[in-house]
Amino acid sequence: MEKQNPTVLILGASGTIGSKLAKELEDQPVDIRITSRRQNEVEQLCSEGKDCKFLDLDDPTTFALALAGVDRIFLLTGYTVGMLTQSKTLVDAAKKAGVGHIVHVGVFAEWDTTDAHFAWHQMIEKYIETSGMAWTHLHPNMFMEALTGAYLPKNLTFTTYWEDRRVGYIAASDIAAVAAKVLVDGPDRHAGKDYWLSVESYSGKEIAQLMSEITGLEIISDEKGLEEFKQLIEAWIAEGADRWYASANIEFVKQMLDARMSYMSMVQNDIPYILGRPAKTVREFLAENKELLIASANHK
Image (cartoon, rainbow, N blue to C red; front, top):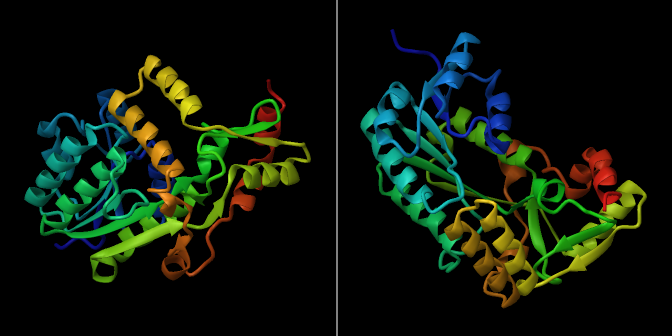
């Protein structure tokens, strides 16, 4: 008997986007399969009635059982140079397993970008395109979650490291909603499509002004540059961050400042076309996180 619903494999189901995607797909006509690289977590999730398989992206021998019977994949790998091998070997295994459609989360970049991290994503995209499987690429700009994460205001100050340059923003919930729509509709509607997700563009001063209006506090902007960012990156590396990825971030800031990545300031928003509704605005996102912003901004 032929199964009614396609099986969708979500990689990174416990992450920022993956967890939201899993929730978006709960009541949709698809069967969800998630993975974990921790065996005890797999057993726990299976005991809760979830379809969960053991998969370690660094161990291709774990791919076959996780991919068996899968029709569509949501592919999002961690931000390290290891993403190249992880994605290549997973795509190969997906082809062997008869997967029909890969939805990949990449970056918001021009085709000839020279930033290493962006180039890694583009190499993965090109490899997927030559695989023979149907594909859809999502291209999100900077996540709004950075404003409530790495760049939370402190001591009534919002700090950026690309001076006065503007950046486009997208909410992770909207990335997940687009991914869900594409995975449910499938390749008949979305194969061979690139969807661009950059909703609004702001400078550091403009973000600080928005934060001030929403919180009622007087939050100022501190627009730092490359040298200060290098110091921040060294601290990241000391805390165990991937050195290749950390270095790519330095190159990102350098190219933001010399205008090679001026396209990061672009608004290119395909969400209304796909979802039939407006995308979440930065103001709406900040308002949802008002209490967090107030608590952090008042912290020295």
